[in-house]
Structures are given as structure tokens and as C-alpha cells.
Amino acid sequence: MTNRIKNEDIIELLKSRAGFVSGAEIADTLGVTRAAVWKKIKLLIKNGYVIGSSPAKGYKLLKSPELSIGEIRKFLSVHSTTIGKEIIFFETVGSTNTAAMEFAAKGYPEGTVVIADAQTGGKGRLGRTWVSPPGRNLYMSIIMKPEIPPRDATVLTFMSAVACTSAIKKLTSVPVSIKWPNDLIVGNKKLGGILTEIRADMDRIITAIIGIGININLETEDMPDDIKTLATSIKLETGESHSRTIFAVEILKEIDKWYDTLIKLGKKTIIEEWLQLSSTIGQTVKVTTGDAVITGIAEGIDSEGMLILKLPDASLKKISAGDLTILRTASS
Ligand code: BTN
Image (cartoon, protein in one colour):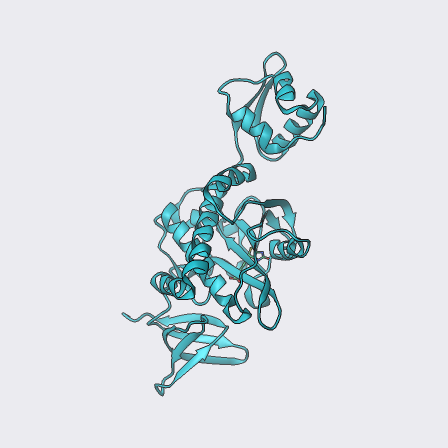
């Protein structure tokens, strides 16, 4: 008899019954002691599961928390090829991207996902911080080991933006679009973002970490003052709370699908889909890149994800990174 018992095992067992399951039966089925069962039940309750208990009848699962790693694992084990076969969860972590890079260095396989309920050092693009309070949003990082050159790393970000946008469109009617290079926006407010970090040789990516932050149930009062007018969430857009479990599953399923597309069909297909979902192309935009501020019309993106701007003198300029503001839409 062992005391080792996984959360999922006990949850699965409780879910498989409409009524109570006795502690003795759980212990027998899982090959653990009754003390170990009780210890685990207490831990599950601490993690947001509502479990009824009766000395005479045993335990009954009444409610799962809205971020349930067990549920995410269960769905992805059936519906995914590569992504989320291994999921590591933290209640709180500095940054899921940093943690995922460390797990990759320890040999964790491609597709491993690190999820946290809260981040104390969430990282945004261009050295910014990513607001990451507990119980509200999705913070996930995925380990990738694609056989592509470092110059194509941007395509991984594009692929992830396509996957996140598709998932949100499948689950809601929120009019989300992609703002170059990787912002998920609704109108002119930011709903989410993607931070891809790589470890690479001159000619190949060793590890890419795709970090995804999506505001799900964030309220205006959760936001620091400087982003109150700039950010939004699925809850603010729809007027109701949503399950982070469902969003995590749908996003990871879409990443699994679009990553497969990238590997099989190449980056052209990803860029075509990105263009369909983007609200940047055709607009008059201002791009801040380093010390320079460049204004022009966003004409398109090249095969490496660089933005092609048409300048006022009609010449074309390619920009690899920067902060983009839409000044005027094509129709205004
Ligand atoms: C952006 O600036 O638009 C990118 C934001 C990316 C935030 C996510 S949250 C999960 C992962 N961990 C991090 O520290 N950052 C990314």
C-alpha cells in the first residue's frame, strides 16, 4: 500500500459517481491508505474543489474550480497530438515563460505547458510587465522545439496569435483581431498578448517558449491605473464570467492544430491566416521602434513576419519589431 495518489485519479473516481463514494472504496480502488485519501481531499478543497463529506457515506464532488488542471489534462490527452501532453501547474510563479525555459533545459519535451494561476513577474514584450493577478486570467507557456531557423521564430508568434484568436472566436462573439505583431485586441483595447522567447544556435532554434496571456475575468478595478483605459477582458466584453479551463483547452487545441499546419504546410499558410484575422493591414499606423517613430500605411507583412510600411514618399520600409498604434482606419 502506498500513499502516492494523483489529484486526477481521485477526481475521476468522484466524478464517475452520482452519489457519495466511501473513503474505504476510494482507498481500495487507488491502492492507498484512507489517511492518504483524506489528506488529498483536504488539498483538493484548498484548491477550489467543493467536496461534500459524510462520516457514514464518504465523499461527493459538488463543484470543480473554474481553472481545473485535471480537466485540461483530460481533454488534451484525447484531443491533442503534441501540445499539453505534459502540464505543469503553479499557484504562483515568477513568470511561466522563465519556468518553461528552465523545464526545457531539464529535458521536458516539446508540447509541455506551464500554467499558473498568478505570476509575480509576468513579462510582456519590449521589457514591460504583464499584469497577472490570481483567479482571473490565463497565463500559459509552451515548450516548442521546431526545426526552423531563428529568423522564422516570429512565425511561431503569428501561429499562436492565429490559434488564440480562432479559439476566442469559437467560444464567444467578441470581435477580437490581431494587431501586428502579436496583440489580441478588441477595438483599440488589449485583450491578450504573446511573448515568444528563444534559445538558439546561429542556424537553428534549440527551444522556443511561447508565452500566452489572455485577460479572461479581469475587472477594471483589478487593473493598475495606467492600463485601465487600454486593456479589456472577455468578461468586460461579454458582461459575464467565463471558465478559464474551457479557454485553456480551446486555445491549446488550436495551437496543436496550427502548429501541425505550420510543420506540414509551412509558414505561408500561417501568414495567410494571420492576414485574415489581422486588423492592421490597410491602416494608417505609427510604429515606435527604438528611438524612431515611423508613420505610414501598413501594406502587408513579409515571409518572416516583418511589417511592410508604405511611407509618405511612397517608398516601402520593413520593420521587424516595435509598438504599433492605428491612427486611422482605411474607411475613416
Ligand atoms: C505582450 O506584451 O503583449 C506579451 C504578453 C505575454 C504575457 C504572457 S503571460 C504568460 C507568459 N509568461 C510571461 O511572463 N509572459 C507571458
